[in-house]
Length: 401
Image (cartoon, rainbow, N blue to C red):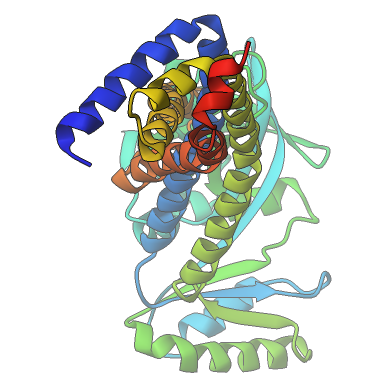
């Protein structure tokens, strides 16, 4: 087919779509909703995956995670001393535990994730102070009731901008205590949140010395330690040594588990990608519904224009000319819906990203996939009406009333 003939079919198809008015608009709306749903899920899931991979990647090579697997077994001070002295390749042993609770300050209140750790945590993650200072070795040794907040909480309005130097009242597992906020960081791990000033019940992030948590709660115990080694090649061997040492210290067998942090990166990415595909397929159901709407409107159009098809065939139009005209109309409906769906999905993704601090990633692959979905929908659901129109007998079509 020549370019000139294709242009003529396009112009005629465009006129017929415009002639449909409200009916065409409602048909396009189904495609818009479907494409917007798929595009939103693809962009937000891609952004979230990239963000998680980036944060895990910050740990770098040579990081070993040791976890106490049994409820009555914990990582003790003696364990950490033994691990530090177990090999010359050990640079740091960082205790770590996250507990959830409630916080309040003035008219602000909400949920908080308390990250109990020590001063080496920030250096390991290459986190710099954004305001104030970080936790110090003195804070940990003296069990000072101080903390560092993630600045996202300030940006989201969960706490006031002047929170540095003020005291947050925190409740964790029934234990009430006051934490003086000495600094703020932009770690990338916090989703902001709070209850009073945010529409979402998302916790803020607070870093405190693990020794301070042990001070306020006798039952608080560390169940995870990160061991930073000189190189990734030392991780596997030291993992076996560390587990054996800890089991002997606690007189247990299999109570501890050691794993490389970087080795989990592929597993996390795989799970997130599977979730993204499943969510996109669920959203694609609305696209199928929109495609059925396109098929329905095209079948109605074929019936209404039966006499027109008969006249065109009588004056020399071939089957493929009729086929191309109706296929073009279906593709115009779905592709225009696809473009508007991408614009709507972009807006929804951007708004969602700003509201809950979830990163969005608009890639050319997402754009191509969205346009391809729209094109394939038009092709699949438009082929039957177009084929049916091309098969009409001109004599029977001219007699149609």
